[in-house]
Image (cartoon, rainbow, N blue to C red; front, side, top):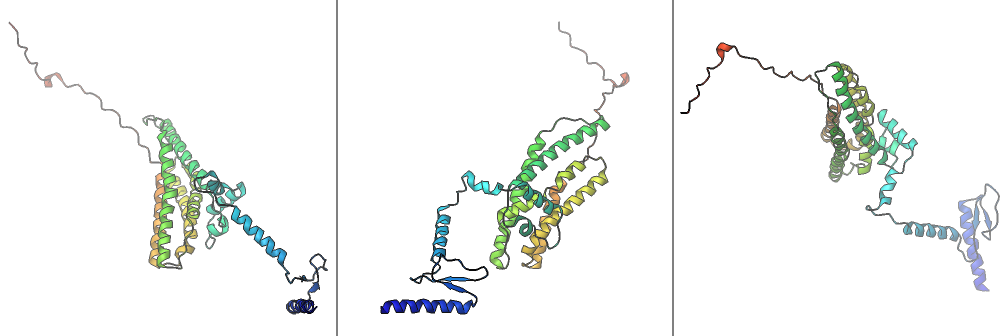
Length: 305
């Protein structure tokens, strides 16, 4: 009997403490009763184990998360998550790369910690294909204007453009990510992006060159350079505005050299995409006949007796 009184007093003491924290709360002696809307229900069982159901649910969730294992990098499921994006997300990220704004971080506002490889992969493939096609079209149009220019299909341009662009999108971000990781050890305040985020930023920054390469078919040199400079400015600005929140914590010298290197490499890629000016083939040398008085005298043949 004394044990029951102590248990009841213990329940009343716990309920009093909870009511002191929430004065508008309503106490119930069971977990199955309903409470009016706008009140906080404090359920105290006879065993003093309120909130046991929440603990059971949390333990179940933890067990489910532990059972769900991350697939290995050699499996298809590991890479499937990097292509799990819809059309709206890809278009939104392309729009963000075409319209860079100061203070607008592409990684934080567009990627939102969910980088993808779908957009960068197809942007690089499309750019390589467009470069090869426009390169051949440039030769065809030039031959129509000047018959002295010889045209032959150059299918190797697809391979050259593809290898160059994919190497740029993977190797340059790898070097940049490694350098920022090294600087993080030197200066703890420098926090780099992940490698996939860096690749994603570089991949989407190349989209502006796809319409630019098509516009380069216009045979006006100054207009071609204008389109190229505009595309380079937009693409480089997207990279600089994205990398600036990371490198600004470093020294001014390191930040200036790093951003200058990024812009310089981007400018080299843009210059390599621009078609070279075509020059007509030199006419073959014509054979000229020497006058008779300049011809060497014939050598006499030795007669055999």
